[in-house]
Each structure stands twice: as C-alpha cells, then as structure tokens.
Length: 51
Ligand SMILES: [Zn+2]
Image 1: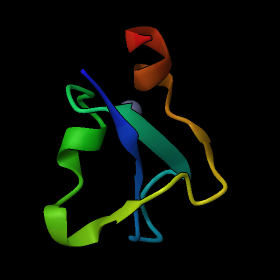
Image 2 (image 1 turned 90 degrees about the vertical axis):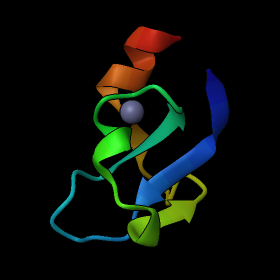
Image 3 (image 1 turned 135 degrees about the vertical axis):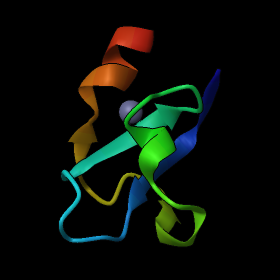
Image 4 (image 1 turned 180 degrees about the vertical axis):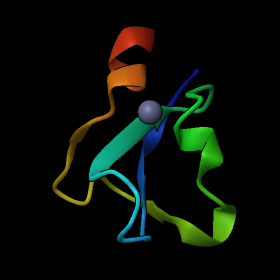
C-alpha cells in the first residue's frame, strides 16, 4: 500500500526514500531510524516496482 515518503536517518543505509509500506527494503529500517519525507533522495527501486 502507498504511504507518505519516508527514509532512514542511518548514514550507512542507501540514499533512497520509500513510499510503499510493503517494500522489503523499507521494512528493514527500524522505526527509530525512520524519518518522514524524501530527504532529497531518489525513490527506492523496490518502491518503483510496487507503483
Ligand atoms: Zn522502498
């Protein structure tokens, strides 16, 4: 399902944002690292596939 853009605050994570809550990559971001918004990053490839 589509959700508001979010990304990880962890600098070792890929510089992408997610906008699907069933993205396998986005699901690996712990809630404590999740930041709302795109962060100025490009969209994650998994989320592109889910569009
Ligand atoms: Zn994603």
